[in-house]
Length: 428
Image (cartoon, one colour):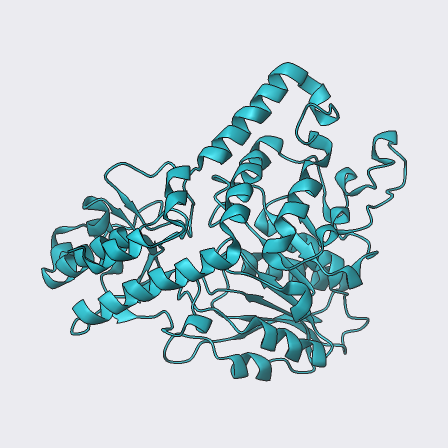
């Protein structure tokens, strides 16, 4: 008789998508929320663009035999990705990196106070991804220095004792001194999924800008940004989107903000009809394309054009369902095998509060991660004490989920980490 994991794999309608990816030999890869595996369609897309470069040279920018011409690739990918975030096709553009897109959105949408008396704050959670924090504080410092004041501040809301953010705490933080709210859709450490619809609604009631970092949810969780009233969002392309290391990021801007002058201007934010005529004054594009800056990195965008077709064919709702089943299965095994140990499950058990990965805390998390890697299982360590396990819905099997937790159980019960160095790894 098949065990439970084999039965789940046998009846899984998305199981066949695993063969679209280059799954690592003799390895269980549970780090797709840091870097997704290469897909065959992504590889084919890169080879296609390399061939276009070889055959067409500079002609690839406009030649119709390029699919699409490179000049329009950012807009084409934006149209393809819009359904994943619940946006209109002209509200999404694939451009820049995650952090550059955040800088662009901050400088475009947030107005500086008119006076020192007009105290303003950007509200975030204290668990915010460090790069987002750095960008926010850079923005605040730039404007404060320019005005010789301290008019802008950064306000943070901490988690509760269980390590999770509380929606009511975040709403309570939306006080009159706040001008914009920036939150993650999924907290990168714990895997907690926030109630975006509720939080966005509360921000709108108070007249606040509401933005999201979707890096740990896009490609794994459906979004309805327009319906929820979100003002802006940004994300990376290398996690669940499987766009490769350093893949081009993306951004969303609600159409009610169309026409705002880009805070960081560049020639690729031009209206395409006049861009190549090189006018002295920038004539911006009508939609999200106006927030582009410089010439796009075509080779870094190519993998996204391949993998997006796989994601859209699988269907984001089916991907989400499989992700929920796999994380729930892993957490049930953790609760069964590891409940009497020092290991603490951080990720919420409820489906509506859980993103795409499982986070566990342990005093020896780093050495446990090393022990898992030595046994052919690739997790992710987050300082100071978190092990993240991500079953990527398109290529991780239920059997791999079971074997990973069984191996984790052996390591924890045998204290197998004790012979492993505490030296912090240079890379995850």
